[in-house]
Every structure is written in C-alpha cells, then in structure tokens.
Amino acid sequence: MKKVAVALVVFISGMTLFAAIFTAQAPSQRVIPNDPFFKYQVSFLNPGGQIPIERTSIKPSPVTLDAGAGIDPDITRAWTISTGSRKVIVAVLDDGFFYNHEDLAGNIWTNPGESGLDATGHPKETNGIDDDGNGYVDDVMGWDFAFDDPDPDCYVFDGMRRDRIQPYWHSISALGIIGARGNNGIGVAGINWDVSMMLLKIGAQGIGNGEKDTARPGRAAKAIRYAADNGARVINWSGFVSNPTPEALAELKTAIEYAGKKNVLLVVGAGNSGLDIDRPENFTYPACFPLDNILTVAMIDFKGGLVRYQAGDRWLGSNYGVRNVDIAALDENFTTDLENGRSTYRLGGGTSCAGPVVAGIAALTLSVRPQLSAVDLKKILMETATRLPGLDGKVACGAMVNAYKALQAARSRSAQSHYSAVVLTRSSCDIAASRLTSSTLKPSLFATRSPYSGSALQKRADCRSCRRFFAPPR
Image 1 (tube, helix red, strand yellow):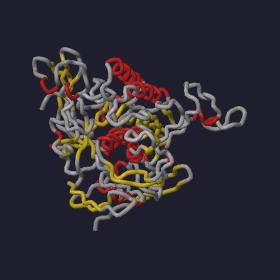
Image 2: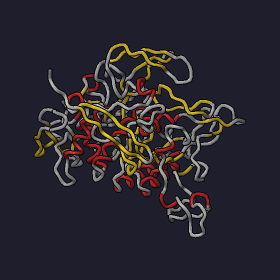
Image 3: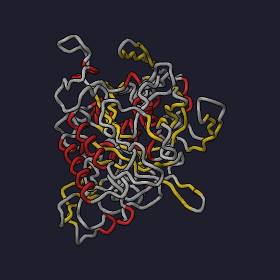
Image 4: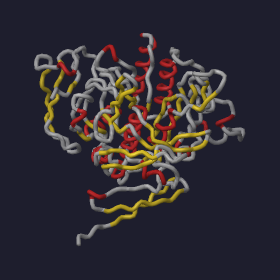
C-alpha cells in the first residue's frame, strides 16, 4: 500500500483556533472547512454529476445541479497555500450592506484612523470628528455616498412603493463569496477566510421603477477614489451605470485611472443581457472602458459554457466579448443572505456573483504576494485560468479563473522577476481585436511557455497604431 503523509495545519485568527487536515501528496491536497453549508458550495468544490443541494437555508428547497467534474476555481487546493489576510482590503461598491450578518461581521474593514479612543477618551467612530483627516467623518467601515454619511446600511426606499423602506439584498451575496468567515462552524466559507471588506454605498435612494439614477456615476467615482486613498487593492463592483452623460463617463473613467495609479484592480461583472459588448451599440460601463486595471468577468454554468437562458420571448445570459470581457467564473454560488433582518444563506447567481469570485481570488492572491501591481495581478489571473472550449472567442483569455494556479504563480514570483504571460491589454485603438492582421501588427520579442498555465508557446504583437499589446487571434 502506498503511504500518504498527513499534515495538520493550524491557523490562528483573532481568538479563534482551528485546524484543517489534508494529505501531503500534491494531487490530493485540499483544505475542507467545517462550515455547515459548505456541502452546498459546489462552485468551490465540484465533483461532477447530479448534485443535490438546497436553494436556501430557511426552508426545504431542493435543487439538483448538473455539473461537469472540475468546473470550479480549485479553491480548496488554493487554501493549502493561503486562506487570506486581514491586511488585504477589498472595497465593495453596491447599494447598501447588511454588515451585521453572523458570517460577515468579523471580516468588515475597520478604518484604523477612526478606531479606538480620541484624546478626550471618546470613541473615534462616533465623536463627529474627522480623526484621520481623509475628508470623511467617522468612516469606520466605509461611506454612504448616497446620503453622505458614515453608515453604509442596506436599507433603501422601495422603488416600487416609496412609502416603505426595504432591505437591499444585492450586495450580501458578493460579501459572502469574497469573505464570509471560513472554518468557523457557521454558515458558509468565503474565498478569503480572513480579509477586510470596505463598504461603499453608491445606491440611489428613492429612485422609482423605470427611472434613471443620473447621479450614480458621480457617486461611484467618489467611492473609487475613496477606496484607492484608503488602502483598498481590489474593488468589486457588481453593477454598471445607465445612460450616463459624456461628462459623467469622463469623471468615472478618470477615477478608475486614478485608482490604477495606486495599483487598485477594479473587478466588474460583464452583465446579464446575453450581448456581445464588443459591439459599440452594446457598450456598458465601466466594463468597456479601455483601462488595464479593469478586469471584466463573464458567468459560466457547471458545464463550463456561458450562461444562457430564456425569459419570456427573450434570450438572456452572460455578456461576452474578446475585447471587453477578460475572464469567466461560475455564477451559481451558495452564499450569505438575509431574511426579515436575520442572517440566512441561499444560492445566488448572475454576473453579480461571478465577479466576486474573481475579486475574492484576486484578494487571496495578494495575501501571498502583496507587492503585485494591479496590472501584474490581472495578468496572473488571466494567465493561470483554466482553458474551456466554450469560452474560445467569447472572453479574452478563453478561460475560467483558477485560484490554485494563481496562488502558485504569485508565490513563485519575486517582486522584480519577469513574468511570462499571454498579454491581452485593453487599448483605445480603433482596430478591433478580432480584426487584427499582419498589416496592423508587428511581432514582439515574446515566445515563452507559462510555467503556471501549461499553455503552449504564445506570441505577442504590438499594434502599430497605438503601441499597445494584443494576443494575436487564434
């Protein structure tokens, strides 16, 4: 019988001591947390076949997932390398947050400049003073850019009935995917068992059904600058702006560029309309800005193809485009939820859940190599992703994010080393990536095998017009 060594890895986080047992044989190394609903987190560990789970934790709600084995981001093997760090700050832009959820509260960012006692012995978080001088008073966990106050709570005026206030649930799925406390015997495990999630509320209060929120781009721009100025390295925005003016778009783009200069990676969902967003008539923002610190995420199903479904007489699903959509992730994630103000759990979906998978893996990667620039972080995530036939010609790297390979790459790389990558950066060049030809490209000195993705030799090409780099068409 072949002997297999067994290792006991002990992690200490705050006052919690917990352990994970896994084999020391490389192919079988996995860390399985003790969270009771991890058994439903097929998006983290997918054995394939017909998989029965529940849709929600509040009542019997059986559903069977039809899955292809291995269509997952290999999170459980990534956890043998890292389970996250409170030093990594992920800013989440959304329309309010239920930050007291039992499985989230321990991973909400705490602003060190607004924590503890002031000179008079009073708590800084409620003393009405801008203790850290960042222009925001008592911003201990983030900011509400809609009401311009320090409480980014989840309650908003109902757009259908303005005489009532309702909890806004959209953000809670993202928070759980990125950073629900793992291995604490409660609920689910986030990609990062330890992380600091900064809460930035940009939602419109009282916008009626069918109305346009014209102030949203400006609020988002302020939130992005806040995140960059207060230590965030990753921003998750599972949203977009509707019918923005050119001036509003320019303000938003400038803010994202500002964040890029501070090495902040903005992860956004591609959208759920089933459209090719490389076509100008389908452009959506911020996904389609030609900026290299934006990583746009498509959603795939458990068979590895783009999600597509019929709603009435319309076909919807993941947006796509080899120029404006970079990578893919599973959208169906069993994650945190709330019901009647209580902590619950449910199966979420959409690119609003696929995006946080990539944002969470970006944060996990930074826990291993915090010196990575935003551009290098994006390259690693795209380079090490798992190639899937159904994504060829649909997203830039033709692949699904792979946490284990990304962490391996980050761990192996020194801060100053060269990284062999398939480079597909965005460009303002008016030549569509799908139409690049030998007349518009010149070869660049680049022909190296990636040690992490195992991909074949790739060549890089330099656009003669804008001097940006593109991966040549397959």
